[in-house]
Length: 149
Image (cartoon, rainbow, N blue to C red):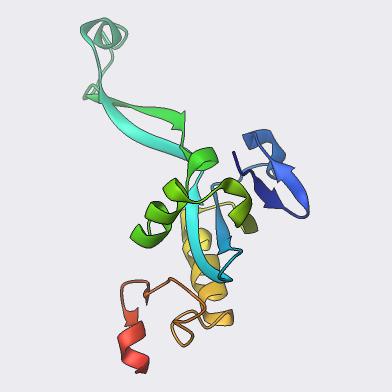
């Protein structure tokens, strides 16, 4: 398995990230072609789970409205993540791991900053203006490669 690289160190657990990291911005490079993809990934999935009867008993006698849900947090699939680009996903199944480099560009403490950093790096690398170098075809769903042709 091709591990993530962050600040020239291999990352294989959440504890390798700075404290309070919400997610990270990454660059995946296909070494034979030099083509890259810049994206973002969160470290933990959070979802609402309906409270069971046993859970609801804990709120017996509490004044006010009882909650109907609790938040369940679990680690995301960041270790095995290859991005959302279909071409990369297909290539990653057929190509050996040593043809790929997965680099973490920045770690972010919040959802808002994560989106900001992703957009920042996509603009810095000019991903839409260089379609021969990058697989990215849009930024924020507002700016597209076709806008530059």
